Image 1: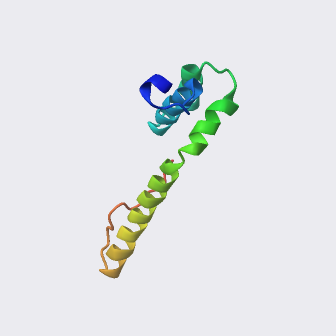
Image 2: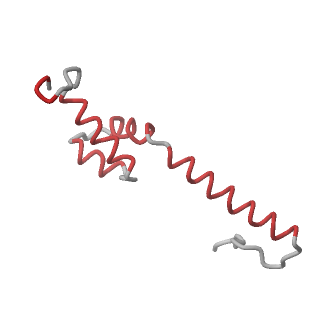
Length: 88
């Protein structure tokens, strides 16, 4: 590591970075576990929790959906965009 100019870097840091990128890509628990060589869900969940940015994206999408409905309601639109329909 000294030869490439990063004396504080450990080999495990590279593995950790790769697992973070894999989790950030949206990989599921099974895929993360296989990639990491673990048969325990706990280790894979650590990486998934670390990249909870997906929660923010989901929340923003929900907000955008609801704001669109509010705007349509304000305009007295009978068919607001993104209207939810019960399934089943």
